Length: 345
Ligand code: FES
Image 1 (spheres, rainbow, N blue to C red):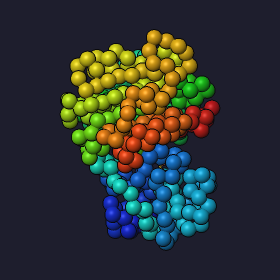
Image 2 (image 1 turned 90 degrees about the horizontal axis):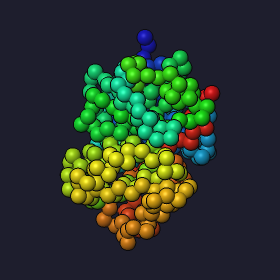
Image 3 (image 1 turned 135 degrees about the vertical axis):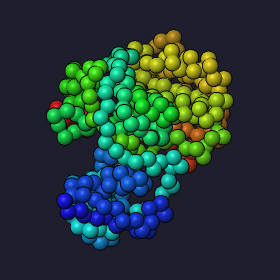
Image 4 (image 1 turned 30 degrees about the horizontal axis):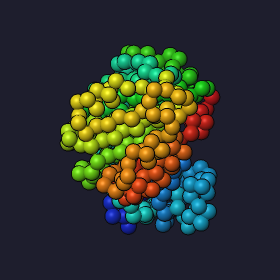
């Protein structure tokens, strides 16, 4: 097999490295399989985090919307490494970015066995899968599940902490008409089935630099999954850690893991659990998670914030944190890609 090579320059985290890249292999995939970090998040060409500048050589890539890479950036030679395949030896420069302190795990392919599938809320499953070789990952990262019979994948964050590396937990919400959920996971997947995974992916991770601060976690729907991993990991590091978890859903029937969080709050004095329902009145907090947080805190100056969920929820939550003076460098976020973009029915 003829290998093509992408050469990197001018990056503090991956300076002057030569990374072999197989034909048809995306540059980001090649980097992460070698344990070389490049900023990345969605691996779908929608966030722009993985952009690099091609200094010489050629790459093939699908059209990039200017909402992701501006027209000027594209003119200047910027491409998305998660979408670009080298068609010659290339030299790239990666924009300087702060490397999360806890990334750098080798990306790899795995086969897992479904151990348990449990309906935990309306149209929501919690699935546990076992893998033979432990997966090294950072709390907050995700894997891609290959949809059988297709070339498509779907992304699900680990809800388990990294210390539990042989059994992975995923929270999966049904997407009506979804190729992965309606046509596979909710339809025919069952305990004992084998599934193929690739991971870990993503820069939305627990940051060791924040070990001393209190944490405020804002989750929307199954955005709870990576925040569960982050909270459990943080408590492993420091059982006294102050953690406020706000979980937002539309209706009370959409809430899940309630007993788990209530029990965590009973057993760890620093943990506080606040479920929020936005579309119906019920016995608990009503409204959006960002508004609930705003009402509860006079200042977020000494806290770090983690948000995961639909884009509107994350954007509103970030604004709320900033209103309460949380430092921008302590805000970490992951937006779920809107479902219609993922459906190939
Ligand atoms: S656009 Fe490449 S990681 Fe998001």
